[in-house]
Length: 220
Image (cartoon, helix red, strand yellow):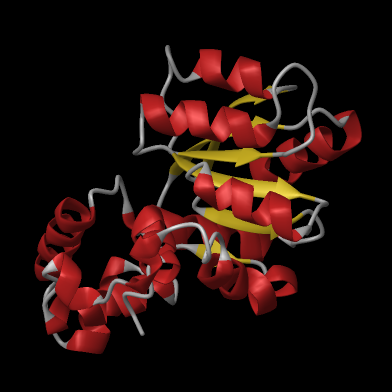
């Protein structure tokens, strides 16, 4: 069982207390802190390194989207799970553009939340079922009339067929282990492919791989 150091960032007292209580019952969870706004979270990661941050969106001082962007720029290895009551398209998109690894609504049960922690820890991306039906449509259509790059294909980026398969599975939200099983290759080979793709696309991580590929029609 994977063990995680967790930081909770939530301004609503009852929700925060409930999260703390429920996660304290899990033997593989160590709660490093429970903060009230994004600015506190940005300051926190400068002295301590949580494995996963559970981040609300609408908070005073600094919202969760801006906080996620700042945290990812400081340490991209920290996984951020957006845990919010909102499912508006704009906030979903902004969350993933800021570098979030997962987007969940607050009525999720603890068992499912722990499963999502495992997914993002293994390099996967997770969308709540309430927003999964439109998330890729947003990414496919964003700014499609603003950049000529949107018409580029895989060959324009020197993407190999194997790398294209990896990109598709990344965009489908599969973890490194799941991609390895799907393509019958080792996880190290998957990591090497992803590193090569990141370099070719000039992006920072696998979340940006999925967004970039969909925005630029690489998978078409």
